[in-house]
Image 1 (spheres, rainbow, N blue to C red):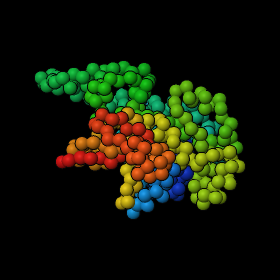
Image 2 (image 1 turned 135 degrees about the horizontal axis):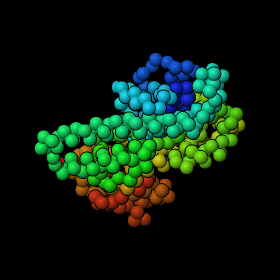
Image 3 (image 1 turned 120 degrees about the vertical axis):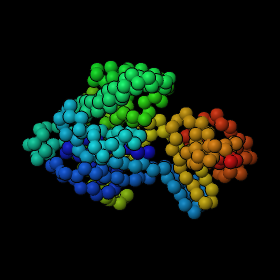
Image 4 (image 1 turned 30 degrees about the horizontal axis):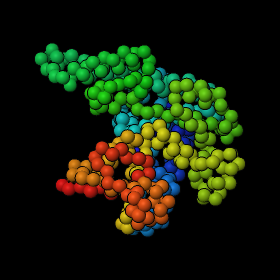
Amino acid sequence: MKIGIIGLQNSGKTTIFNALTGLSAETASFSTQKIEPNLGLVDVPDERIDNLTKMYEPKKTINAIIEYIDFVGLTSSTGNSDSFSGEAMSKIKNTDAIALVVRNFDDEVINQTLGEPQPLKDIDSIISEMIISDLIIAEKRLDKIAISKKRGIKDSAMVIEEKTLIKLIEHLNNEKPIFEFQLADEEKKSIRGFQFISQKPLMIILNSDESNFGENTELIQEIEKKHQVIEFAGNFEMELSQLDAEEALEFMEDMNIKQSARDRLTSFSYKLLGYISFFTVGKDEVRAWTITSGNNAVEAAGKIHSDLARGFIRAECFSYNDLISCGSEKGIREKGLFRLEGKNYIVQDGDILNIRFSV
């Protein structure tokens, strides 16, 4: 899973990045010339894979991974499409979701330059940038289609794409992001190659002070009218990420925080994207795999390797909960909980799969 972290300059997004990854990317209360994003890989915490490792004692254990990409800070000049152009920002098109960090903290230096925090205004400003960027892309493509039609080039795929783009342009011109627009499957397929920014799932990270963290109910409710939102005390969370587990727990209790920023955002992201985990187990390796809820056994097999999907025969399957309840695979079989599933089986969260295949 790839999550792009964006935000206005001095919103504290790199602080959030550090809190999530445990890294120490440079932060500053002023604009920098840095254009390359910060990258960080984080194991997805999952008690189930820890227990499977104890049970199977494999040579290696591989958790699911989230890649966080901290992009350069955006300017607040709504209407400047350059904010979403260039080599660095083009990488955002390959992300699975966008985490938009908005400032909800006071800083003497930042306040003098940018004024007091205005989270709702900042959210609207960035989404407007996304809309303008997508509108430019859609209009350019529509112009190219018109040229092709004049040259006598036309097929059914182009017709669907043209109709879809016309709908999207009308929607974007009403200052609405694409993620608010319901697209049919064939329409989604026709524009898949564009990776429109405002089409991606969006989560808001409200970056608060330690002093006002947990006291922003009305603001959060206002944001929730349109977006999924989670609140962090960014500086505090960054400091926590540098401590050992025991020390961090003590400070978390003082702030009434039950989970680290990393754990909370992981759960939040899985829910937003509709992701689930299945596992493969054995003496060589215990591994977690991430798929979308509703994926079938063939799609899960393809996540492991394309050959497994191409030559899929059956999936040997049992659930993590049944395994823990029975204590072993032998117990699973004795109680008749071991199953053979076909191509159309919908994989469930916590399934343990072994794919039978032939190529």
